[in-house]
Structures are given as C-alpha cells and as structure tokens.
Image (cartoon, rainbow, N blue to C red; front, side, top):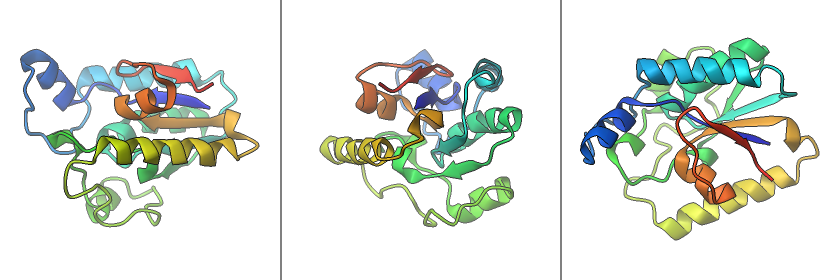
Length: 171
C-alpha cells in the first residue's frame, strides 16, 4: 500500500510561516500544492495502483484528482483516513458542498458532517488508524492501493513523517 500526503495547503503555507493557526477550514491547495500533486501523479504512474482511497478534505481530494486522471481510476472517499481534528483546517466541508465541488465522486459513504465536533483525542485517532490498517491488511490486493491522506495518518501508520506531496510504502 502506498500512502501519499496531500500537497501544500493554504493552512500549511501560513502555519509554517507564522507558527499560528490561520483559521482556514478545509484549506485548499496552494499553487505549490497543485504542482506537488501533479508531480505525484507522474511519479506514481509506473506503480501498479488499482485502487485510490482518499480523505474527504479538499486538500486531499485536490491531490488525488491528478493521480486518478493519470491512472484512469475512480477515487473512493473515506473519512477513515481523515486527519486528526486539532486545528481549523481539520474542519471539513459537508457532503453537500463536496458533491457540488466534486460531482463525479461517489460521496454516499460519508455523512453530511464527517469530522468530529471537537478535537479528537489522540488515543481515539490512534485507534481509528489501527483499525484502518487492520482492515487493509485483510485485503489480498492491498499492495495495489494508494491512500491519499495526511501527516498525522501517515505518522500513525508508519511512525514516519512525510512532507507535502511525499509518498511512501506502508510496510
């Protein structure tokens, strides 16, 4: 299984510049983030990917889009790989708003409000990631799956940090 961290978002850009939460819910990609997504699509074109799973956050969906186009695959949206809610960017867009922005996506697997109403306890986040890993481990073709997700999810699954637009294999 390959884990791809979304490209640079407006939140990432401003947070790294100031060290403060800039108050941007469901932050979109910056132009650099879009370039990172395009580079990931090129880099992953040679991989034997047969399934794309993606977090419902806009920055993840924008990162998955060029990869899906390049590989000719649909994107399955799942909140199982959403970021741990701890900052303004972790407030998502509702299913109805996502459906308007992404009419080709099947969003039937998510609720209107799919992120928690308050900061997600770290233990609960770790348990969610462990459950996702166990569910994926049970799939015989998991090696052919790309998961477009977030820093925290990648860290919880691998113990490693990944920069924006970086991808790595889950052992």
